[in-house]
Image (tube, rainbow, N blue to C red; front, side):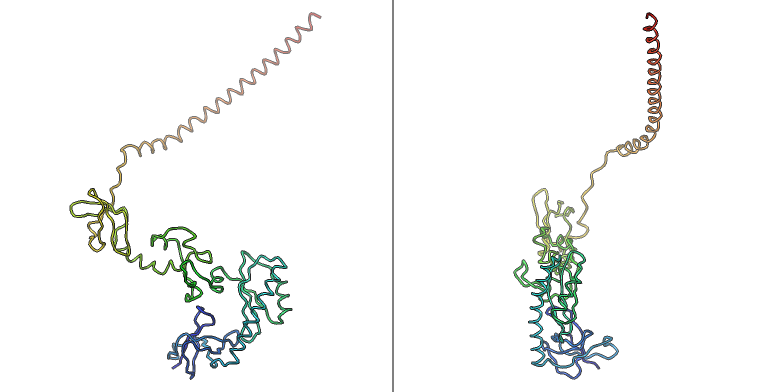
Length: 333
């Protein structure tokens, strides 16, 4: 049997599995773990659970020890170095006039590498910037471009609801969000109201989307005809949370519960009948149009030929007439 705990490196970050060994761990403990980038400090999220070795993840790393006061002091020093590196990098970006936005600086636990997270609209040539950073801090430098959602997750903030951003407090992975989710929940499609700090659609639009879809299945859509006793009316509004619909009849507006409406009582609005002969006339006109064009084109060519021939005849007559007049003028002299 193998004891496995889940730990995170940042708040609301991705969870990773580590072998607990014989250590007595509980949620909230700071531990030193072995990673592909070397040793790092992490926070335990779940208590140890036993799994069979056959079901253990491949390449499972282990927890080395519980973090000591010296380890916590080292992490605090790294935080101070990150703030200094952030300020220095901002000055260099401004001096060089680079089209990029620095988001965060992260030092590895052993201080062997500094990772600079930034956002940009396109590709950025930061080779000279890396040389300045390496010369200043004497460590390996990595520039990593991230998206606007990751930027909000790292920076944090307060959403339009007045609470801390979901992505920076508990949302570990981003899910795709679409405008359809807002439409299903009858929300106003105002970009300022359905967009978050990152400028993208709110992640919370997907929290209740499936619930709304399941509740709407029990209600007839707007525009459907519903039988109300001896009369029939049209659905004009849905109240998804209460499970009711408003039906407009000849006697007025009636509110019905979705559970009281039977499937056989719902029907489609009858479509308006088409005028007889109208489609056939259109088809006939479309079929006849190419033939008339073919018949008219030769006539146009004949007319142009006749016009050219008339011009040539007039020109020849004018030339002949001109010569005759000249002779008449010379003879009297």
